[in-house]
Image 1 (cartoon, helix red, strand yellow):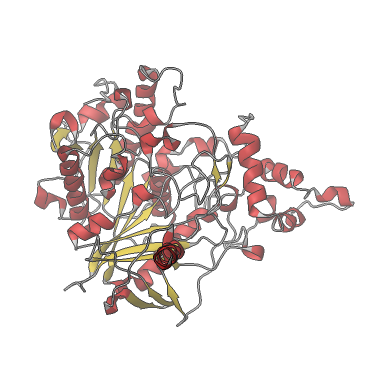
Image 2 (cartoon, rainbow, N blue to C red; image 1 turned 180 degrees about the vertical axis):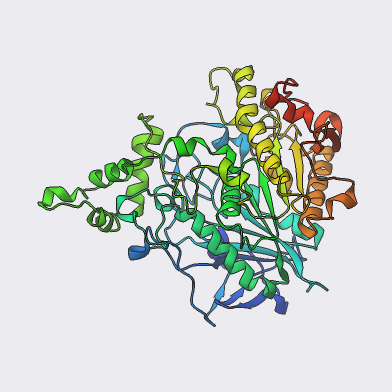
Length: 547
């Protein structure tokens, strides 16, 4: 009986520290770090003894109550001590019940932690909260001889899902292996909380914006600049890295803060501002989506006998609605029910944070003049079309998928490359095409190198898919090579890649420049001419999604 009680107690302690897993402490002094906003004690997992993990550090005031739908507020200086041993709650988001590639075992570990609910709950995420503006840091245990380069990662998810607590995106094995860099991931506000497009927020005040999620990212970047030295990082060598919607957001920040980007370089993984042009076309100038939700929540103030032309009363009323009620209404009534037109909340053009015309801004050189790495997967859209539940053997119409691969994948990347090339050799652009396929990530051959399939390769978390099939030695080789090439860029974005024989891409080169391709045709990597991919935009070549 005593042994049983001790076992239960050990499990309970582990659950408090993080999702039922016990995180043993280390006596290493480096596990407690003093920052400008507080002291934080992380932990060292014996499985990764050379890596300190700080899983929950706030970078802004909680955007709750009166701060809901306001720009992030900077934290005040503090000496308060906190333990940073458990991931923070993700920002409010809906966990759809609609079956797709993303909530099947085929992609196990790519969604946020959802408490005691499953990945198809059809409800607001159980482990979500409006108090969610936190970041996580993974850093070597031994103090480095010189400050280390930093990769700050923005998760994807269409600006409606995502967060720090995603198993695919935990970089501990990479940091453990390299011992020469730091990785940070962040939460940011999503959906109606991050991109409300509310009448009550329309203002000439420069502090007012509808793109709050983007401002959260900027605030996190500022916190990292001011505090990463305490963790052994170099504040002058931060690479802003985003995937999918996170990559679009990283590019948005490059255009929004061209004179003060903070980051020394940018890594855009499967997304650029030119990938999101449709959001401009979908602009809701009348703010009808927010008002529709407000009316459904009992915030139609006209029924009380007074007008609300400014939307201030509507906004104030909506700040009193519990966040779970808002998320469940939008997700249940529209996402899962399939109601059309879809009630969507995303990027809002305001010509301050998110611009109407990125072509004009790019041609005018109004973009951060920093080295840029742009990557894509070879068959991006096979995982973005509706899941072909009735025809899983043949899959979706590949011709239609390939057309999207080119129109929304290849050509926007070419544009992003070309416009940066115009800025001169002081803004080198490096390019990657990921084409790897493996038994545990590609149960269906028609998937190819689908959107986000490069994430477990990049983070070194491919073993999470071993329930589908064992990880292969080739998969590990590709993963480590990709990590080494990206780290060479993050360490020295002007000269580091060249030391590995990887040259900047210049699209005016007759052959389209040097494109580094990973995992194709049994090769860990090979160098191909850019025209083999980008030529599809001019009809010079037929695009091959399965190289």
